[in-house]
Image 1 (cartoon, rainbow, N blue to C red):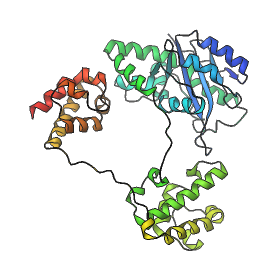
Image 2: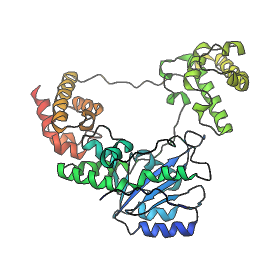
Image 3: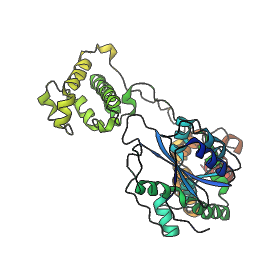
Image 4: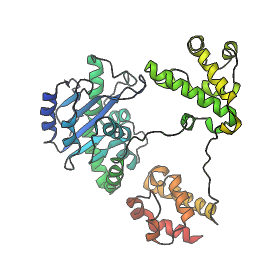
Length: 380
């Protein structure tokens, strides 16, 4: 099927019309879906737009205008309808987080591309290579919570799904031809279970670079991160747009005592010093006053000592992967990521049944090369 490129489409803002569109969607065999969010512009990220396309029509569904999106739950959760998405992981999580909607029969075109050995698997690259369609990236980082949507933004959003079904047609046919469709189906079943999880513990656990800090410096970083989080919430801005993590790391290390000290910290602007300077100094002072026994520690994963010969086994497995991935014309990480090879090397299975005990190993991987792995392990 050839793509259709008419990107002008109806914006759904009324419940009555959403019910009608949901009924149309429920009669389809495949639906293309994408989401737009506002994570670059607001403290609490939310879904701001849901794009859906059939073979002939597209709609933009506005969650900011609609109080109830439950009519979408039936078509998106129907096991008889294939939901085609590109890079679906976070969209699957967000649909469930914001609306309780579950996708149950997914076809992820990005995963499909990787299983076909395609190295440029971004949607824009795929549509250009396959159909000569140029996607406009102008609104990639736009604030999708703003209303009204301009005609240009609406066209941009619709373009993400309007040509996704013809792409699905091609990729699914190629997967079938190569005998790899079952690989994708297993990955997509697992992906449908992805959920947003609440972060627990100190904020420094999610701060890149915090692992190298100790004691009072780590305490200062935590106080600064907590300060930034409170200000971001108050200002309704993403924390990184209040003060960068890199700037907070340097602040924690230098432990400034005066506003003049702040001006010497890389990335600290005069505006930030004016607005947050006194609060930053107070946060540092709080950390400096903490009793020794209350100073935080960055948790270290206790790495188990490798079992006898596991390093040598891992080396052989990686060598095997290079040969196997080359023969399959796939990226090595698609065939078997490092963490999986490490788990196999440590477990040292001697039978296919023992492969079942390795967490995260897929059925398609066992079928495709389980015996080969066992052979490589036995060869040593």
